[in-house]
Each structure stands twice: as structure tokens, then as C-alpha cells.
Length: 150
Image 1 (cartoon, one colour):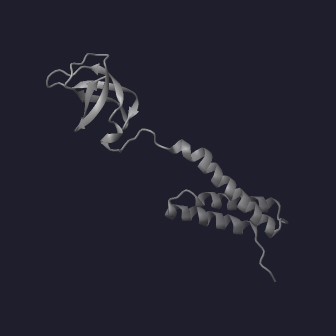
Image 2: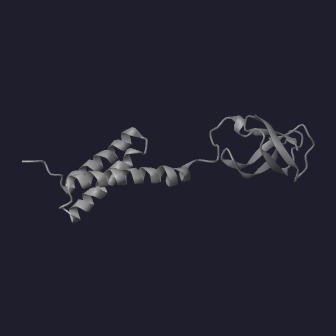
Image 3: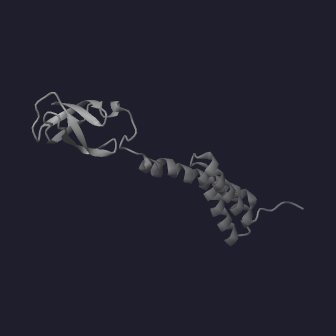
């Protein structure tokens, strides 16, 4: 009397793998679990599928799903704003003066794309700046950028 894999074995196995992903936080085991659920559904409609074919299809589907994740989906989730990075991430960036600093009053700068989560920043400078000047970030003082004319 041998053990026969039934469709619900694959579905339970897949769900266990997907629940294990909660503990692993790698987003890798999820694809093995999803493939197991797919094999379980396939086995529901084709119950005569041999165990060898089931395992082989599971391995191929798992590999294909994991490869698709790393090749196509994961690059879409990468944060390109540099939010949370150190001040060195903003040094050297170039922006346009929206309002010039005047004495104790801070000016305002706009970057072409958001830097560290925002595209407009308060600025101060030793240089004489006018609206529309192009400036380069040389440092950070609190939440204000120190800039110089380019």
C-alpha cells in the first residue's frame, strides 16, 4: 500500500509554504507555495497525473515563478527616491531657485525629481541668488539645504 499525492496535499503544502513566507520575509518561498497550489488545482482536474510529473511540474513552475519575480516584478518595487539615506545622497544635486534667500529668510529650491522624498526644499546660501538660478547642494543644515550657484 503506497502513498498517493492527492490534490489537497499540494494545496495544503502550498499554503504552509506561503504562511512560512511570513516568518522568512524573503518573498522567495511564496513562489514555491503558489506553484504547489497550482499543481493541486491541476491535479484536481487531471487526477491520473503521476507523482513524478507532479514533482517535475512543481519544480519547473516554482523556478519560473521565482525567476519572473526577480526579473520583472522586484525591480518595479525598488524605491528610487533615496528616502532615509544620509545627507551625502543629496550633496551635489542640482536644482532651480523658486524664491531667493534674503537675510534670515530662507529661500526655496525645486529639484526636477523628488530627492529624499520631496522635490521642494528650503535653502540658504552665501552666494547672492535670484529666482531661476541653478544651484548645487553643498551641504545640509537641519532641514535646510546649503547651496551654491552653479
